[in-house]
Structure formats: C-alpha cells, structure tokens
Image (cartoon, rainbow, N blue to C red):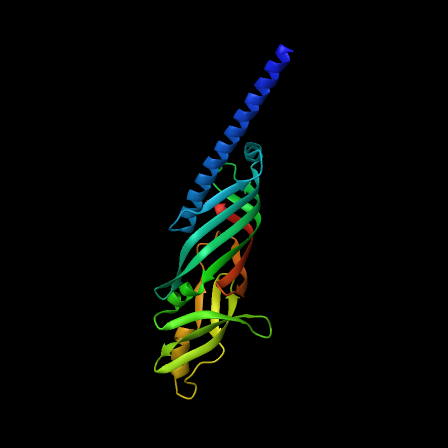
Length: 231
C-alpha cells in the first residue's frame, strides 16, 4: 500500500509539473507571438495574444494550434492625406493555426473578429469643424451617420451612408450637401463630408466584411482565410 501511495504521489507531482511547464510554455509563446505581430504589422502597441487548448506542448509537437485570440486596443492607422483614424478596439479569433517547421511564422485557416471606431475618433479624422454622430439605418438597412458643421459659409447637416470598400476601407458618403447651385461648392464641401479611411494594421489575410452603426460608434466585422500571424 505504501508503494502504491508513493507511486500516486509521484504521478500527481509529475502531472502538476507538466501542467506548470505547459502553462509557462504558453505564456512564453503568447509573448513571442505578440512581439512578432507588432513588428510585422508595424503597430505602435503590443497586442494581446491568447492561445487556447490544452495541452499546449502537444499542439506544438503537432505544429498546429486549435485556436488563437488576438486583441488590439487604440490602434492608429494612416488614413492618407496626413490624417489618421483610431480604432478603439480590434479582436480576432484564428482557427487551426499551422506553425512553420522553423517556428518563425504561423498561418490560420480561418479567422473572425470585430473592430470598433468611436464617433469622436471619426470626427477627429474628418478634421476641424466637422462632427460625426449616430443616425441609425436607412430603409434598406444600411448604416448611416449624421455629419454636422460649418464649411465654406454653409451650415452642414447631412446623413451619410457607411459602407466597406475593397475589404480594408470604411467609406462615408453624404446623401446630399449644400451648395449644389454654386459651381464647385458641392465638391469642396464633399471633400470634408465624404471620407474614405483605410484601416491598416490588420493581420495579413484579414479583411473588413460588414459595418453597423450603433449609438457608441461604428462596429465592423472582420473575416479572413490563410491569415498570417507572424513572419
């Protein structure tokens, strides 16, 4: 009986040590992946990386991870024309992540996620004198925002539809603007009210899919195939 108890204790201790080693390996791998994503995507802050599944070491031996979650807060991207747009939050879940033989890069079969941009940040991206706010949906279900401000002597208050272009750009297009009877006036006003803001910094292989306007800002769904985690 004593020998049996000793054997059980040894197995328990070994099990605890294995779990501890497994969790330590996960922590180190998550930290390394976060640094590589930051470097490869040119981010200004380090993303959060969470590797799911147990045991991790068995997944590493097979060079395939079941699921990886990535979170980025306060992502600022170049929107062109010397302006930028801030993405308040970006989250992504990657499935069936294949690790290269050298462990220097990884590719996910598929991915889903979401991004959020506040109206305050959209207003900042629009430039001085323009405010972007919530306006619900039109009759076809497309999301809309309300743009207000003073431009070229006109008091601007117009509704704009919000759409995704080319899988990486958010477009705001005003339904109508003042100055239609003055040559060139409408075009100049639209230079400020109509916006196309490219969202960079996404992992390679991911794209913007759908957009929804909410009271707090714009929510964008993100999808991807053969998504490169690092490299």
